[in-house]
Amino acid sequence: MFDDSPRAEFLGGVRAELPLLLGVVPFGLIFGVLGLAAGLPGWAVVLSSSLIFAGSSQVVFAQLWSGATPPPVMAATVGVVNLRHLLYSAAVADYLRDLPWRWKLLLAYLLTDEAFAAAIGRLRDGPPTAHRHWFLCGTGFTLWAGWQLSTLVGVLLGAAIPENWSLDFSIALTFIALLVLSVHKRSDAWAAIAAAAAVLPALALPHKSGLLVAAGVGIAVGLFMRRFDGKTP
Amino acid sequence: MSMTVLLLTMAACGLVTFLIRLSFIAFGRYLPDDPRVEALLRYVPPAILGALIGPEIFMLGGNLNATPDNPRLWAALVALLVARLTRSVLATIAAGMGALWAIQLWFG
Image (cartoon, rainbow over all chains, first blue to last red; front, side):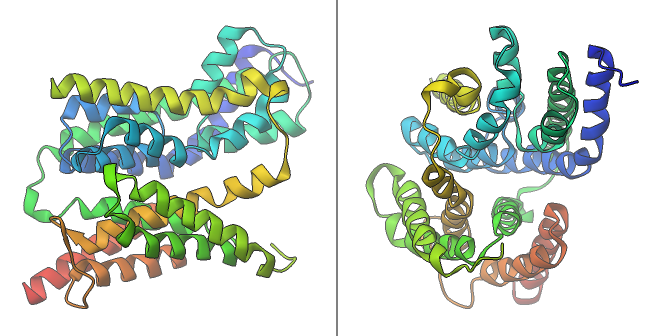
């Protein structure tokens, strides 16, 4: 008999999320260290993990802040980095349609890459019971707790690391790893290459808008190269 | 002053992120359901990451250095290779930092 109590669903979500923490906790530690290396005060690094709560965009935030970027451009850039969450929101929306607003707000806040990845199977393919949103709550909360703790430990460690270790380079390395993970088709790679090529001349544009312009060039090139991808994914 | 700006900017970034995640959950029936939007969103992560990596490697202290004696260029290539082989964030960072330190020790 399927146990669909809130408690059983929540714990099911926790169990589904735990293996993913293997990848998330080291990233949280690194973010704590590199946030300090980028010049953010420790409290801001820790606070960004609950206020923004989106790993790669927090790295972008630290990097843009160290480059004295105007706040509206920072918010726009963080928004573009997190635009993919529109897809997650669309994918879970149907399963959360009849919930009260406080649940919608809470689950939207917890809707990260990893919480979504661990919960969508249960929502889509599992029994359509009344408490299945507790499963998403379980994956989301587990990821949230792991991210807060690992960021905090990273900040405590980072304060003890000397500056001449060039740790700020770990920002670029994080982006390289995330980029490789986001490339599945040839056109994805073309989008990245075009954006990387466009960004150096685009840096001369005012108000640090070069990043957004270069990303736009990359998206356009990716859309154009899509026709050469072939049928197999 | 600067701390207030930092706090407000962070709150704005958090609000933008939250609203993106809330979008379809809250306003699903008013938003367009279009495969072209999905195709466009697909290229956002690789494009923005490509744009972010460029300056991190080629701009050091506000100066452009796109020549072979830039150690970050070679360390980034090592990291790219390791990332493709392992698909691990941790291994990529370890390999890239190791390569940068090795180059700096050797030629520094």
